[in-house]
Length: 169
Image 1 (tube, rainbow, N blue to C red):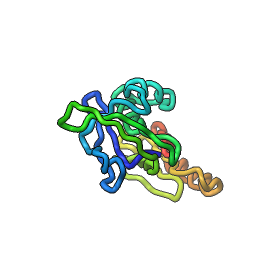
Image 2: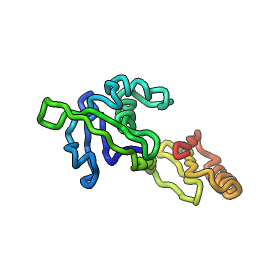
Image 3: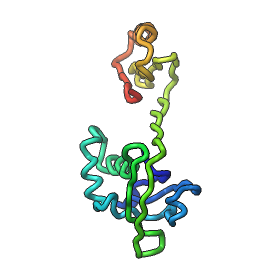
Image 4: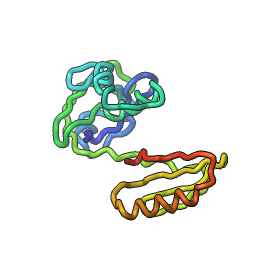
């Protein structure tokens, strides 16, 4: 959970990109463009390094920092987070304390660039290079998944290889 604030990694800084206009954070002066300096008394870089073990895989340092900047203010629902920030266009820092009340949405994986067939639990198709692609959207319905998976495998039997996409799980 996060306070009603969205942050991003911009020019090697954690920058506020959106603030709910009805929130305490907005009322206390937090606006897009503000740079977060510390969270709960710890320097931002220390916080980013502290959450690194929770990100098991990332394709580059840039992607790690992108994801970590989004999560840096997160914690248990209704817990407080205090952070120091520099307002955009200023050099004087401010500190605020707000509640974490907003559940961060999970980014859906993008759809493939090639044609796919969509079932309730399984999506499948062929890449332009004739590689089979199977995406398991959810593991919720075991028997139905098995039937859909078998149908996808049969349809892709003559492909050169197979990609199994389970990132939504």
